Image 1 (cartoon, one colour):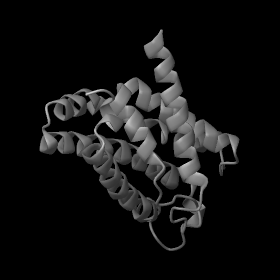
Image 2: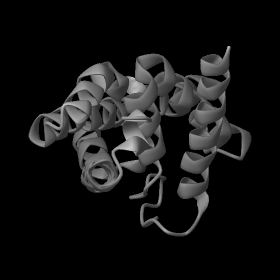
Image 3: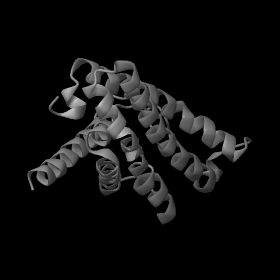
Image 4: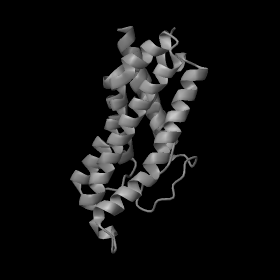
Length: 187
């Protein structure tokens, strides 16, 4: 029972932190149709590495729900599902590497842990990008003037997802390196 309570509390806290990091003006919100370079995915990655796939997906899903509840830009119900229900949820796919990350940290295998974190952060970021890319092609065709829709969506979404991926990877690894208990609890 204690573990279940801890799981729910951590998911709630890290989800709230992701949401706060997304709405506070500490990122770079330069894109007119949404998307920003922010620290917001970091708490989802931490939950995913601490609690695995279940924790990561749940935290990501709740982050998407909070986005919708506070006024997300939704043109069509399916676009809302893809860009908020699915895109934020799949960030939690990083949890597929939780076991390997935790084992590597416990065995003090820094390079191996970094590679698994890289794989997890890349997978979560790439999956989120894929959702935004597809939604951009399907639902934002009218925003494109004189350029193939797929190319516009690719450039637009990569322009904030690549920096967000790099920023998340650096911070998550730094947290692990300086404070390994952040990711694995008791050592």
